[in-house]
Image (tube, rainbow, N blue to C red; front, side, top):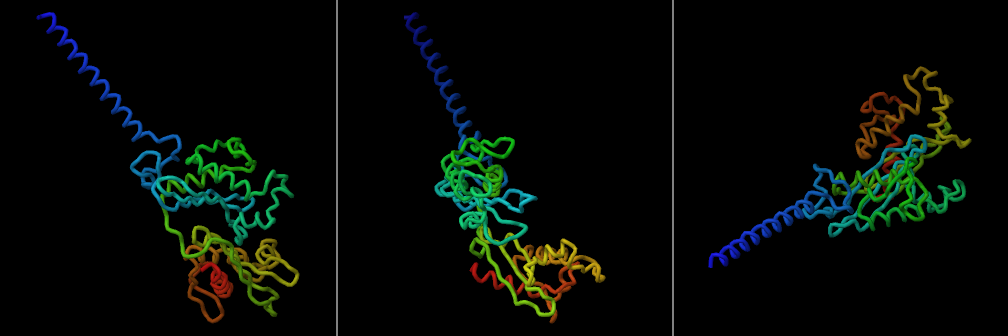
Length: 302
């Protein structure tokens, strides 16, 4: 009888120990699933709330992020992501030009004006390679899955030879920022021009770019009968405002007007009858026509 009791007691102790081990293992597994990001999850920003309660999923909505602009070319990449049911279902990699404004990079490439194949010897046009990168991100659900080398390129995506570091950076920035609301305009490039001024010999031109519904780039310039770009004409020292006693050159002052336009989301400052304003510090030139033309250009974006 004593022998049977000892055996029974040992069995009970052993069962208790095994049950305890099982609970510890389950708790460890739950902790890993909750706290450790799954391999297909992009790095989460703790202050953005961009992930759902379930690990490995994103909050539904539209995400927008940018990478730094290329100082040489002026192209600035952005990525738009659509998340549905906790997963990235659509990815749009594009770029706008902070120097020239106008059409988005995909449109330039689709129209044959980027010339990645004809001019750069690429295996495919830029918009075609961008589509491959987008598909890869949708498959992997994680920008970090795009392994980038020192040149900013990757061997991870078949059919992509262009640099992708901006794509990765913009996608990660978008996910870190969390869902966002788009602005009121349609994405794309928009232009307008005035009449040739008989006195000055210049015709005012405006080029704008919209991304995620917001105005992200503006180029206020002009063209003369010879086809010279007014802004470049000034940069080259040919316009000569300082030589005429002005405190700054024309391209420097118009840059301040562009900044005001972008900072105020397209709103015009108070203007006098001559089209001048006291609202923009450092600007003494006529700027009224540029804000009027910008409003005209945006009519196509509504």
